[in-house]
Image 1: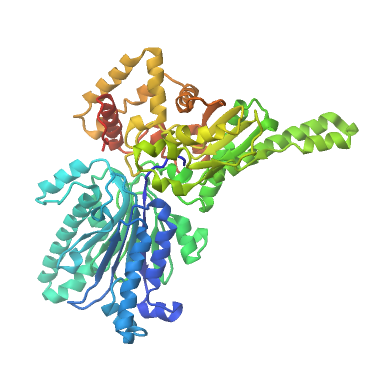
Image 2: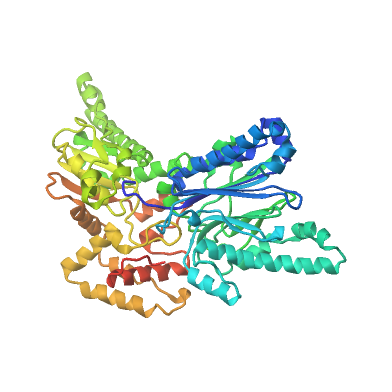
Amino acid sequence: MSDAIKHECGISLIRLLKPLEYYKEKYGTAFYGVNKMYLMMEKQHNRGQDGAGFASIKLDMKAGERYMSRVRSAQQQPIQDIFEQINSRINTAFAEHPEYENDVALQKRHIPYIGELLMGHVRYGTFGKNSIESVHPFLRQNNWMHRNLIVAGNFNLTNVDELFGNLVELGQHPKEMADTVTVMEKIGHFLDDAVAKLYKQIKKEGYSKREASPLIAERLNVAKILRKASKNWDGGYTMGGLLGHGDAFVVRDPAGIRPAYYYKDDEIVVVASERPVIQTVFNVSYDDVHELDPGHAIIVKKGGAVDLKEILEPTERKACSFERIYFSRGSDKEIYQERKMLGKLVFPQILKSIDDDLSNTVFSYIPNTAETSFFGMVKEAQSYLNKKKEQQILDLGPNITGEELHQILDVRPRIEKVAIKDAKLRTFITQDSSRDDLVAHVYDISYGSVKINDNLVIIDDSIVRGTTLKRSILKILDRLSPKKIIVVSSAPQIRYPDCYGIDMAKLEDFVAFKAALALHEDLGTMDKVKEIYEKCLTQTKNKDKDVVNYVKEFYAPFTNEQISKKIAEILSPEGIKAEVDIIYQTVDNLHEACPKNLGDWYFTGDYPTPGGNRVVNRAFINFYEGKNERAY
């Protein structure tokens, strides 16, 4: 994606089902879980590079012995920083106490981070906050083991203000109005309540206070706690949690917006944001890894029992399609095929743009993540040419000469690696005074890859803001002197803000929005824009379920082609010689390519939760009033 977008987060959870001595004997180290967590976090570093956190819990520790550990980092390479800290503590302990080396019991008692229950998190700072206080996992501490709660998630809620107010009404005093803190305190409130009720009940049964503790752990109904806590959550989420005594859970939103996968055998339970991460780290097959159903939680009790429980009734499945287009690792079996299909399905529009002139057209892609859709696009071009060749040969009949046959067969799609990303330059782009000149050199080109007056087709994952296209890519591609530059987006036009975890919060950031606004100005229909603003204002006091997305009316007068044409005008840099055409994937084709992930609100405005309509209307109000702020 040439436009850098901060997005998503990644979670990892590991529960070792055997004693630590088992892993020492079989795998040579009691730190088996820690090592696997490092790999899982590294394999998900695509989901977040602003911060990382790790937490662990040791089971069955004696009173006074440390049983919870947490380490977080917001350094430039946070995963490496975390595990350097962990390794340093482990190595120091071994150096000072050689007797720990082969004694797992001593390791568990005295060395932090080793444990049977581990959770990792990688994050992008979608709100621009990147202090250590914003990094997951979050910790809610208590002297009662059962009331300790560690939470990490990949999520964004649209109704944090409402949930915060609910906590205040319950008598709580949360330290900040952040969704992570609000969620943790919400779960924590019902956890406290459940523990208190169980304690009271167990005392009535005649047990002592000390005897009550293991019974509370055994009887605690985690699913019931999650049902009460999540009752009013509006948003997309995959939320992981650890309880101090050793229960663990991961819960997914009812629309399945945010992803979650799990694997279980007799040694281990694993949950992660992405399927291939589990496959690679634990060397298991595709079919062994299962998707956590929307609205469900996977719950692992301290005793090792694993249950899948419905927490909230699933709604219409609206799994995020951006996961398939860009965010998730392309090594997933299904995602790899889907991205190829996206390239294939956009080819007819390309053919129309180049007037069927494949002989004078070069195909390429914007590195690095558009490469898979590029393969699909080129394969479809080959199929199209093969059909043409077949017909030409049949038309010439049995009298075809060898020379004619060779002329026909020699025609094939011209494929080149035209754009080269010089990623190191990004780290120096800091001051506005030098930004434009440096941005222009983020990409380089392969000189001689395109003939003068060729068509140049170059595919990207998506075109969101178009800033890098205008400032860098189109300028540098124009140096090759093509007749026409066709930039292809494997995603449809991004028209609406996301409010479920992707950092696309302001309408005026989207080039599609700018294009539609320019079309309103061209047609003299700015009164319509004011009317939409006034309609949005009338709904600010409505309950979320009654709010209508009036921003759809902003785009309604225009076809996709009209908006794409205006985008091409906006993004064409001054002085460019080549004609520029912008092609976007259609929403129908997106659904055909990614049939299991039909979440498309950023393209269509069809939000899967009521809070989405409130957010998009607020975004339009902010735009119209000139407020440069987020809508949620």
